[in-house]
Image (cartoon, rainbow, N blue to C red; front, side, top):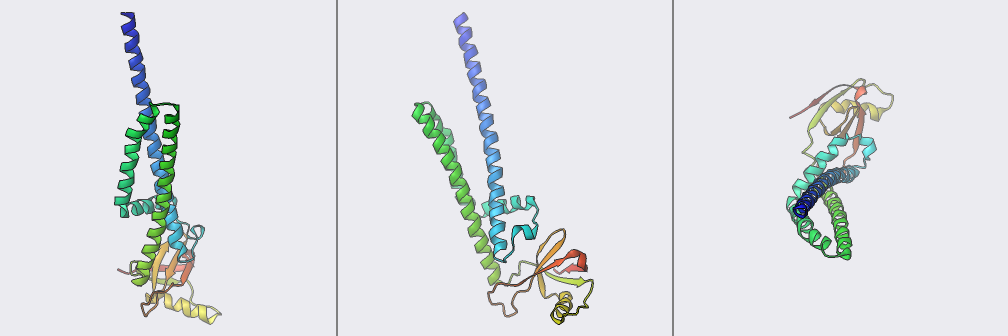
Length: 218
């Protein structure tokens, strides 16, 4: 009777330990997935705006935008992400338990396989982000950056001692520029070539404190 009770207690202890490890694995996967999405979004933004010769410190993009960019990249390449996810689940649910229960070498091999899978996931995400940034930039360049809306901007002053600067201020309300990015303090405008030829557009950076109004055209 005592032996049966001890066996039942041992089984309950093993079940609790298994549940604890399962919850720990789930928490680890969620944390790694969040870090993967953020890293993917950061990599995409870095390379995409790099085509415009803009650094992330200059653009002042909010951190939560990186999560949005990351989801967008993974959504675009969903089939490749799904394939890797199935392989990861297979290795976690089947190979890892088998190797762990085999021997000490098996447990070490299981740990190495898990670390290798995580490394491959981040390298794959980095490659997808870089490719997506390049593909999207080339697509927009070919289309004349029509994905970005035309804007009219009225600066606080159009008077300037420099003739080129004065002429620039006078063109801002004429809807010749497209809004690339708007932050809390800055406006980043681009003026695609009028001949619609693929070219790298010049970036016009304005401080919002120096503008009276801005109208985004449909």
